[in-house]
Length: 202
Length: 202
Image 1 (cartoon, rainbow over the protein chains, first blue to last red):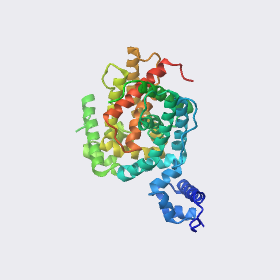
Image 2 (tube, each protein chain N blue to C red):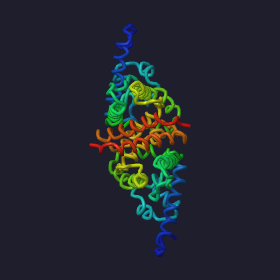
Image 3 (tube, rainbow over the protein chains, first blue to last red):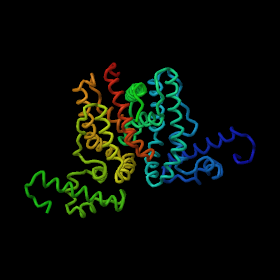
Image 4 (cartoon, rainbow over the protein chains, first blue to last red):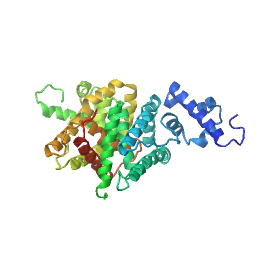
């Protein structure tokens, strides 16, 4: 039993994480965002509801993790250039946001954030902070390579690369192909390099 | 009466346009996206429902026009540089998407587009095409100035500039200040110039 009190540490936690996220994905595909409940997720995962709330503060956070990404995302492997790294990250973002569950969950989450600034703040502190850490890692690599003379704000790079993918998928319902992802990465990489070499803002 | 059959041409149409959009805005503010109806809008505007359907194929299109922008948008005045023009356009996009009615309507529209590819296609052919025309005008100006040696795709420029603003507002519920809009414009302008001077894609 998952909550038997055994001291198995991280492996036991990973098992529950996996079961909860898999249960949420199954329910999402079957009944849709609005009808998924924490109770049904706990029952399907075979865990107590407390085990879910220890991991996710709300249904919105659970369904974000189940459909887009959890807190264990990593930056893509070093491709040897900022342009290559941004293209690889753009592909990851497109996969995460473009899968059928994410395309269902994301608009529902956005509508919920309009009504709940607390949810928006919470998602910022968790998933968005995790995404920004990946951008920070890519910018640090580019600094070490000498591509960026001056450090740049990871939050700006995050908006610049993710924004176009997000808008194509959710404002236009139009997945972009790999050529477009490469073009986006090329323009952003060239722009960040030029900006880093130019005068500081403000 | 608006539908009296008088041959007044454009001025009469503009009067109805204005009345319909003002009625839709009033209803949106009072009852919210889901409860606005074409009937109520027609009644408040003092026009027949047919007059609304001649202008807007669906409630979604009417409420987009009433909250974000109608079909009469124009590119911002020439600032003398691609960077300045993109900053001016980023400000317009932020105003259009960041006003309280647009922040209510946009997530509802996105959720509706998930269910209706026809609506997404229709919005692409109308409002999005109009937005792209403004980007095409900015890129043509930059070509005439000699800033862009090779023509660039307006759809790519549109995604690159609007995407970050859209994502900040709707994924993060976080309006961006004018310094950030200027930074976004600087990176995109530098990136487009570098891309235009480099090899053609593909």
